[in-house]
Image 1 (cartoon, rainbow, N blue to C red):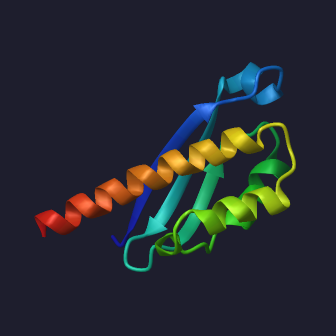
Image 2: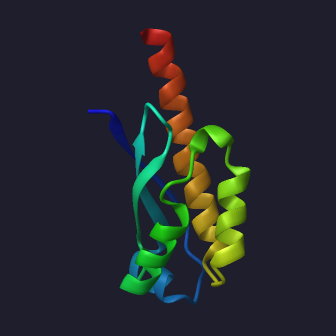
Length: 108
């Protein structure tokens, strides 16, 4: 396989339906390890529309470009109370992915 699955979580904003149902904002990303492209993503959102919309915002992003461009994309297109929580979850997933990639490079 040339893809990996990586997750990230952050506290959901209190008072939001996401907080009431899940307590956290979560992201699962499938990433192509050869290209560093996000090929698929899923989120712990209440509505299918929100899940689908944010998937379209981040799928295709090249993580080798760093995280700033992805964070900017989210800020430019996703206007909700959970925006900061989503960004924190994405940052956690990115950090986990980069750590694993560094580890695999040193063991191969």
